[in-house]
Length: 54
Image (cartoon, rainbow, N blue to C red; front, side):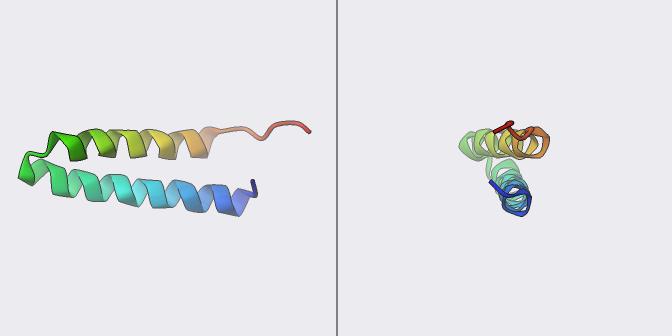
C-alpha cells in the first residue's frame, strides 16, 4: 500500500474517532465510545506500521 494511501486512511480513522467521541460523550453512548477507541487504535496502528520487505 502506498504511503499516501496509508496516511489518508489513518487520518480518516482519526477524524471518525473524534466524531464518535464527540457524539458518544454527551449522549452517553457507550457504543460510540468503544467505536472511537477502536478507530483510534486503527489510526495508531496505520501510523506506526512498518513496510514489509518484498
